[in-house]
Image 1 (cartoon, rainbow, N blue to C red):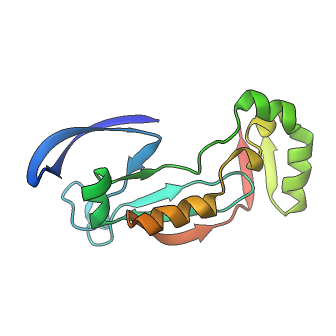
Image 2 (tube, helix red, strand yellow):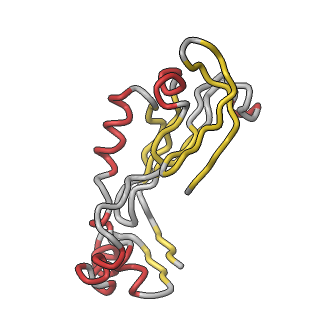
Length: 153
């Protein structure tokens, strides 16, 4: 999840070439940036912000303010709050599977260990993350998606 790109941004009031290193973040350019493929030139580049196996995910698009405040960057997910090792101890995979299936989500996983590591409870509340991104003015919500199925490998 590390990306470094040579991009043109305003720095100190002047446009300069800079290398933007994104860790835990992704590029979120608004409409009109020349780097955008033609299909996104009038809408801005869509960014998928995944939640967890049991929560919503979102499609967002960056704003002009993001260019000035974050070099056109936003988070690329809700973010973990529990390590994988702790998740395995606290959230048995079998229980995670039962909870997801009880809410109507089809699950296919290579192991119960993987399900334990990715339990919905080990991630920040994606709705709160999205709300903070919107309140900061660096991206706007385009769509909310809820999981119908999960594949973990």
